Length: 99
Length: 220
Image (cartoon, rainbow over the protein chains, first blue to last red):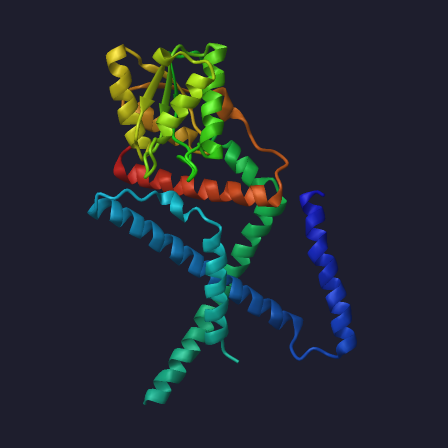
């Protein structure tokens, strides 16, 4: 399956979910509002990702400069940091967002 | 007074941070979709391919690539690079094979493990030079130069795994060696899956950080 074909899967399931949700009754919030919230959540997570990487680089370089221990910068090259940043962003966003 | 201050703070945070977060979020999602579903990141990776073509040299230098796995064997990327060096030696690109690599807590270093593999692949022990343990590309360049200078070797064929070829070449040239890239470095990933493209993006981002660090430190 090509990469664009992969994109069709979430599009199809989103349309199905939309049909089911419409049958269940009117939405309490507008679609535009949902898009705004999603973008803010993505923005918060992106900020956390940038902060985590910046802090990680700083810690690695400081350890190299201050101690004789060598720490590779490649320890930061791990997908889990993206997932953790998303989780951080989601929790922080839900906690701080205005009602 | 405190309630006015609280209201003001809420107003500022609502009017300033929310639109900014939306822009940042839109930018992040745009990058995600462009990287996953277009060949943009592959084209970006192609820009890092060196201008210079592969040529015969006096030594093949295989840089460290991932170290030794917990079981004691080479990691995938380290084994791939070593195999490329062995292949180039057998094809006659250079009469000497320099194997570099990091140390670690294990009995043998990456370079020693690589040398063992090279010997088992039919390369004479006299044609193998071990450069290690070293941790960074800069350390590798200094160590390799120290090992090759007494032999009168100046021109090396560099085998590097990943997008760090240009930086590695610049670092080796900075210590006084003439560097040509291995033909392997000219390969470009095409038609990659979204996951492979994300992996390539991570590698390119790490390379960007490394390049910035090397510039600040004056290594390139």
